[in-house]
Structures are given as structure tokens and as C-alpha cells.
View 1: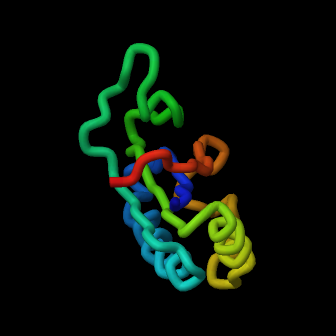
View 2 (view 1 turned 90 degrees about the vertical axis):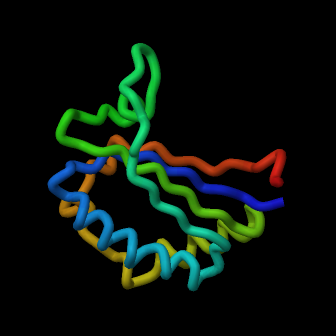
Length: 117
């Protein structure tokens, strides 16, 4: 069964084009190193919840948009190998302080699917 990394971040609306450029660079690199699928989504219908919500989870402000992304791999073992290659890839070496989003508020993690249809 496959393995999935999920990400949720808040991107300042003014930086959305810069973020999309970054994602358009990163996606093909992930795929080149063995990911099966790479998806980046801009929030469209994510209301601010009273207790929990995507915007609350990343402390999104009114001038930010939520991005939900995931990468699919063949397995956890494959993910670990792909991630190692991606993190070592010189094309993705960047100054984290110059990123178009606040990485300290990023939520990410690996998930083992239990059903795939």
C-alpha cells in the first residue's frame, strides 16, 4: 500500500504567485526522485471554525490563504528514500528566511493509508 506526506501552510496572499513558482519547481523534483503524485491546493471552501479548522491550525490571518498539499509514494520505505534525495537536491537549497510562507506554522506528517479505492 502507498504512503502519503501531507502539508498545510498559510501563505500571505501577496506571496501566492511566489509560492506557486516554488511549488512548480519542487513538484517535478519530487516526481523525478520517485514520488508517484504531487498535489498542491489553494483553499477554496475552508471556513474559519469555532474550535478547529484549517485556518486555525496554521494560525492564518486575514491576509493569508491556506495551502493543502500531499505527496504520494510507493511505500514508507520509498518515501524515506525519496525524501532523502529531495532534501539533498541542490535545486531546492534555499534560504528558509526568504521563503514565501512562515515555515514555523507548517503542519506536516506522514500517513499510512488503510483504504485506497
